[in-house]
Length: 61
Image (cartoon, rainbow, N blue to C red; front, side, top):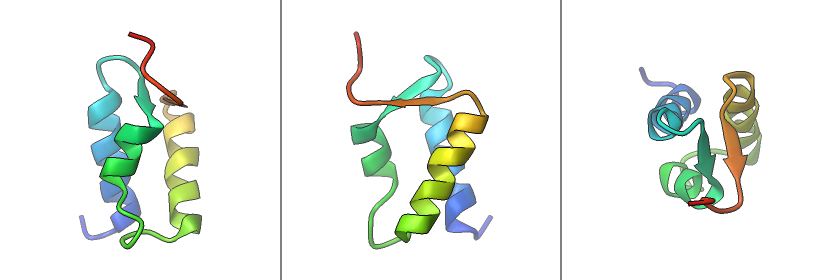
């Protein structure tokens, strides 16, 4: 899998699998800005939403 968007989605979904959400901080660690453009990051956020994965400000735990 060479597509950076697909790689980012895979990593984020694995991170969020247990709780159905991922924090922006966790996502930021998975998506180095030098790797993806802002448009690609938007694609990642949209795909995560389609998968039912919420991106939240902070972990509620």
